Image 1 (cartoon, rainbow, N blue to C red):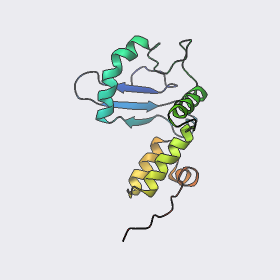
Image 2: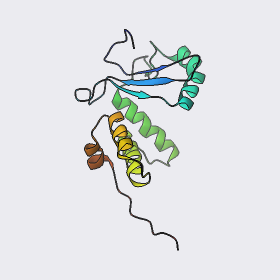
Image 3: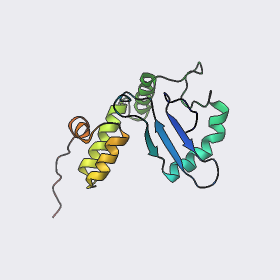
Image 4: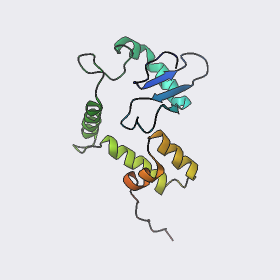
Length: 149
C-alpha cells in the first residue's frame, strides 16, 4: 500500500488491465486484536467499482467515498443509521442493522451452505473475530425443514 496512513480503511483497485482489487481493513473496532486484514475483491465487484470511479472521483472528498453533508468522513454510527434508514425505506418501515446483516450471512453459511471449516475460518477472519465468536454470537440456527416425500 505504499505510504498510505495505517489508521484508515482502503479499497485499492487496478484502474486498467486485469480487474483486481483489495479491501484493506486497518481501522476497526477489533484493530487491537486483528491488524491489517486484507480481503480480495471479486472481479465482478472490481468491474462495478471501475464503472463508478468517474463519479467517485468527481464527488468524493480527499478520496473518501462515504462523507457527510460537510465533506467529512462519516462515523460508524452514521453509517449504521444510513443502513437502517435505507432498509426501512424498502421494508415498509422495518430496519436491518449492520449486526443483523452479519447474523444473516453467518447463519446462512452455517445452516444452508455445507462449506468446509476452512471457509468458515476465512469468513471469521474477514469479519475480524474468531470462529468461536462467530458461532456463539452471530449464528442463529434455523429449524430443519421437513423434506417433501
